Length: 204
Ligand code: ZN
Image 1 (tube, helix red, strand yellow):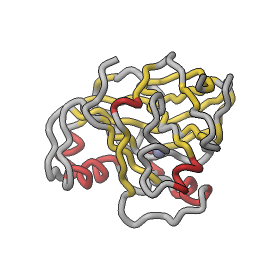
Image 2: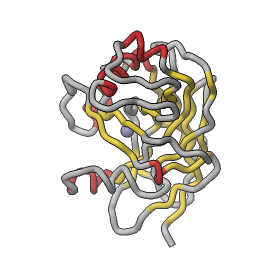
Image 3: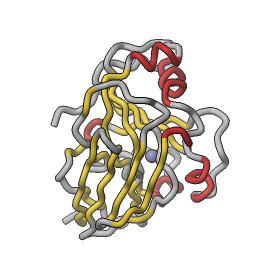
Image 4: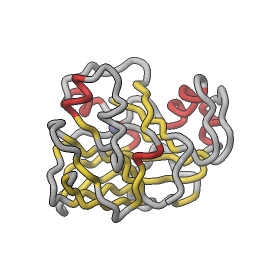
């Protein structure tokens, strides 16, 4: 699949998820990057690295940027969105705590399953996310419950780094994250827009 130029990620953007991991509710967005090399398409496997402890799924709503955004207002940012993708922000939870930076915890190969892009301008407050593991619903989130609304997030990010066409911004995960095991099948769906389905395998 064609990979984004960059993947900008927002952490702790739902109150209940921040609480379930024992984190403070942030007053400014928590932003980090995933490498393009971590992206896999729907149907491709998540490969669990060995010896790193717990590895979680995180279902997220992703926005695909359509026009260059630099120091954009929220209104300009909203107009710069080209489409929506479903994304799984796979996270090595123990490494996220023990490493100073999240380069590995969020950056292993296959740690960014991404569904096909559906183009269009969504209702940014009206998106719904569902994550299923082995067919049972584990996360259900509504974009209206985000701590920072999507146009505000894009504006904030573009104040520091230019967002370019094809870049993807993922907007945080709602409560209900949990560990993956080899043999699981995890599916993230942005209802009406995109879904990504991933079998889970252990590293050989
Ligand atoms: Zn995440």
